[in-house]
Length: 301
Figure 1 (tube, one colour):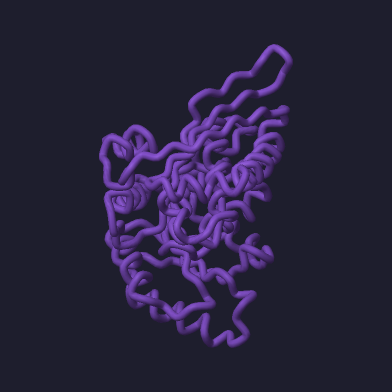
Figure 2 (cartoon, rainbow, N blue to C red):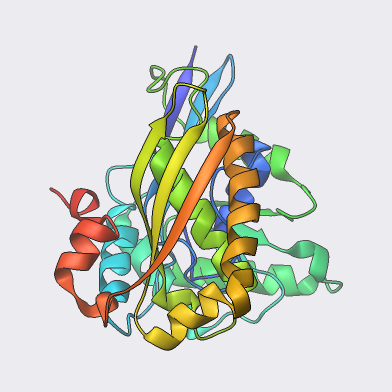
């Protein structure tokens, strides 16, 4: 009996959904950062064993949008809850439940899909009664909860229990993806996300939500080197200056760290050619969001 199914992660921004997926996969598949709303696009992460295949659907955190970029991200997040087998509703054990968690609970409950409540970051909580209080409150807000698992994605605590609970509730089914496939996204998407992650880590608050990365060219040359030309898109000239840095030091650092990780992911030597472009107010421009950031395909019926 082989089991398979699609499992969507839901939660407010920055509760650790991507960190949780990477911990379960035991390899980095999605980018992570301490900045809220790091995840912008839907990505399927495929976890396969001899007995089951779980397709984790990682999507933006559910939040109240402040601009068109946020509106598109919310649409992607809500669509990710449709047509799937199970939801993991991820909350943060370290912080009191907020209006943002209640906002997520509303959408999760309305989906009507069986839901496992995942209380993350338990390694940061000394008082275990806090976890019980969170569980009780969420169960009062969300009618679809079928199990609760308290975990630490960072430490790996109770991830085996979470997998067992997921597999117990998956239907019998086929393998949707080959055994060696870990994501449904092309290498160009992963490369762009890695570059954006390095920018998030290295730059200050003015930059994170105003940056996008577009892979303009990706060619494996005759010598086996993977040539990648990428444009880093920002909204203002001042942001361009921050990313380039004094004497080009910042973009050089972004390039070195990105290249190393892309080489690890692709197992190829990489030549990374980075350029910074200003596209004013791109976060409120439909054309940029649909065709550049890539929401066009994600929002198709």
